Figure 1: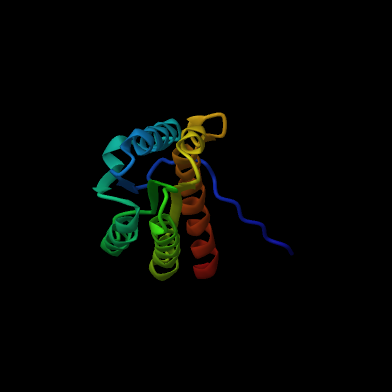
Figure 2: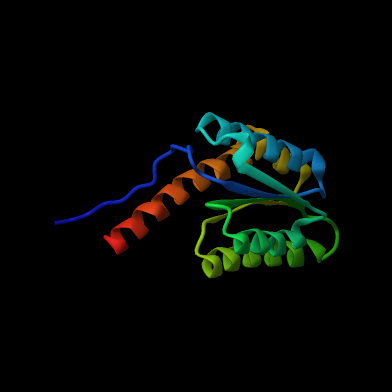
Length: 160
């Protein structure tokens, strides 16, 4: 008999951590707003959301890791905006943020969602933070709810 699992979008009872970069706040504040709105719409009360603000995208993985270690979060959402400039700095920050967030998820065993925009232009960042391409913060929040619920199902099946 085939068993199929899929996470629900019911956020009740979930505790969510959010790490948000302060650099490019004109973008990251919109990502955070989208994430908070989506969490609220799906039943995650604000008292069950912890927001940690970090200076930039490079610092996101460390705080995500520390939040994961506490065991107080069912999922962690990582938000930031790395916009290409005229130097190679963009490549290093974007790579380390992505690599670090993925490693935190794998090593902690909890969903850690990557909502750090890596764009070529400010216009592209605007489009992905509430513009014509939606809001990546909102998408990450929906993914966090779904993944946390799916992980509960997987672990329930393993122990059952």
